[in-house]
Image 1 (cartoon, rainbow, N blue to C red):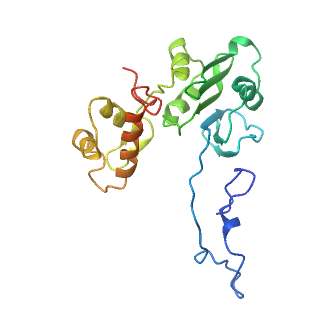
Image 2: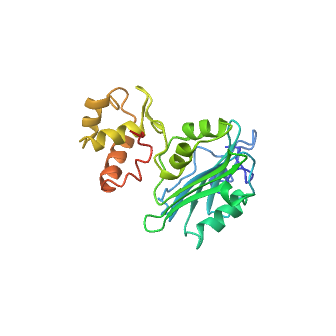
Image 3: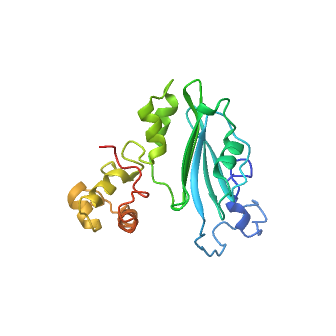
Length: 234
């Protein structure tokens, strides 16, 4: 509601509402519009963070969100660029010096990550995966707040094992996706297993489908940890 083309490429939900309105108030038929939902099969998904607002992306799907000291962009596309680095530098901006740009690419897995620095400070970051990335954006916000990143932190940016416990899955007990992935690595094979090990999903139960989804994806990865890239560094 109230979204427009300024902050999203495909966020105009009201465009699907019937054009009929109440003759007195002008209220649209918000509660009487039939809808059919279909899953979209994107070739890649990802997000970017930048200290400055970026030009609109040519990704098929993008959303622009204002954060504390940076802008965040949720992204997805039906086809991957021929050259991810060229695409990323066109979107994020080219570095002033070669050493201000670091990147990692795994074409077989469909993964790409890069970071641009300015005077040693993280200035922009891009994370791309075939699957929806489940990593800790809170940890990344901490990296943006630092005046300079050390070598270990730069390596962690590219490793895909982004610090912290990941995005919160179970709000009742404050359990993040990273802890759930850790539990799967340690033998959990069901939502009930996760409940016994972490208590997640044992209160209101609204997170149980998401927990099950994480379990299945983690098992399907066969130890690659792509979905579990939020796993804490040991």
